[in-house]
Image (cartoon, rainbow, N blue to C red; front, side):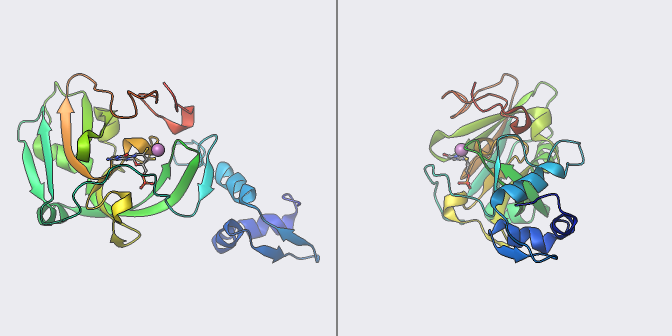
Length: 237
Ligand SMILES: Nc1nc2c(c(=O)[nH]1)N[C@H]1C(S)=C(S)[C@@H](COP(=O)(O)O)O[C@H]1N2
Ligand SMILES: [Mo]
């Protein structure tokens, strides 16, 4: 394999090509050579294309997949009619939304990169949801709040500092890839915190609680890193 030949480089600039490379397709290039592009080529391209903040798009030690992998967990109640999201804790105006009200609370469609601690990442996963920041401003978070606890079915929780939680790419999401979120991925509603390892993205979300003192969650109390920044490889605590 010759990654540096100009023909290969120019092909690599084309998105469509990158997609076919991801499938491991065999490609004939100018000059008659046949190159089989393994996933590593795509991963090297991903490493080379930095984010707006200058970080490599693919964090260290991660490998790109084409779609989210269901990683398990104990699902909550699947029914949308029974669904409630509670926004509470250190806020001036706590509130609860049912599914219909949530859908009408200012939905956005975002293409988000996610990074699982087990080593896979997905680029541009299409989520529809409401920004956590919008829910927070509606609740009027008190100045004493410093951390956010994402609460899910069966007592699963994940913690993030308030400033991290309020980043504009963080969602409470009910659609993935233009379709209703599959149950395995957290239906009816999950959190998405793309810039932290994916365990922070609580599936089967039931509440967002603002607190003064940090509360390490399900994985954070089982040996995983409290901050979980994929670019620092904060996998284990
Ligand atoms: N409620 C709940 N949320 C959860 C989990 C869980 O077990 N329960 N697992 C976490 C972990 S470890 C990961 S990697 C992601 C996986 O999300 P996915 O199954 O949609 O890929 O969900 C996170 N959210
Ligand atoms: Mo995970």
